Amino acid sequence: MKVKLAVCLAVITLAGCAKSSTGRSQLMMMSDSELNKMGSASFEEMKTKEKISQSPAINRYVQCVAKAITVNVPKSAHDGAWEVVVFDSDQVNAFALPGGKIGVYTGILKVAEDQNQLGAIIGHEVGHVIERHSNERLSSNQASQMGLSLVNVLLESQNIESRNTVMAGLGLGMQYGVLMPYGRSHESEADIVGQDLMAKSGFDPAASITLWQNMAKQSAGAPPEFMSTHPSNATRIKQLTAHLPKSMPFFKQSNAPKCARPAIK
Image (cartoon, rainbow, N blue to C red; front, top):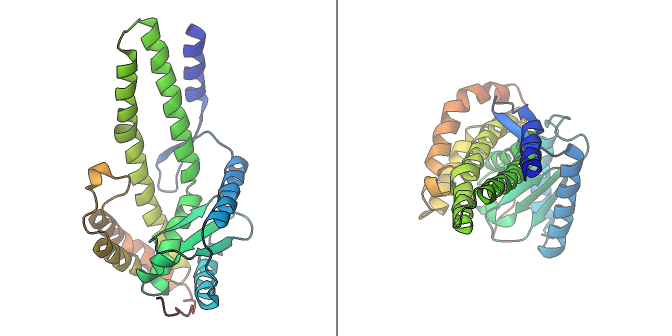
């Protein structure tokens, strides 16, 4: 039992620590190569399960915006070509994965009114990759499981009869007390990193604010921020507005791409 306890403590203590570009401490327990393989495998699986858009105009538009964004991604985040796929779905969603993978659902094109707002979306998603949020999330999950195992060892050593009840309570605590704030901090960080990235790529960073105003209209009746892994729309708008003076100089020094937005049905 003491050996189990020592192993749990040693793994957590020796886990890799890093700093994000915003200065936030990060727990990193996986290598970039592992994350890239996982991202690529997940993307390939999605392509077999989701309907892929066959619209040449929509694909040209999304590829144009994505290319403008990805050429400004640090090589430390991904050194190589990016694969961009448009999924034909009403979902208001987009994502980027380690290994240089981007997915955009046609549903979100109805919310993003122009190339600047789409640039905000893709910039935000790529921001997650730049800051290695997938590594951090998976590492946090691993550490949480180790923590639960550690508590399990301690409870067994103290012969607590209600061990299962206590463990269940800790599981709920892990869900709402520890991991969920990481989700909000990731989203807020990706908002700021993405706003700078879109500005460097020639997209008006003020469009990120308009985008989330549009999102707010779409998400009427959404759960309160306390019970969500994402910041509220009002919080995001406030943070992006405050950061705008820092991202605007990047935009003024960039060249705006010309991505023709097709009619979105």
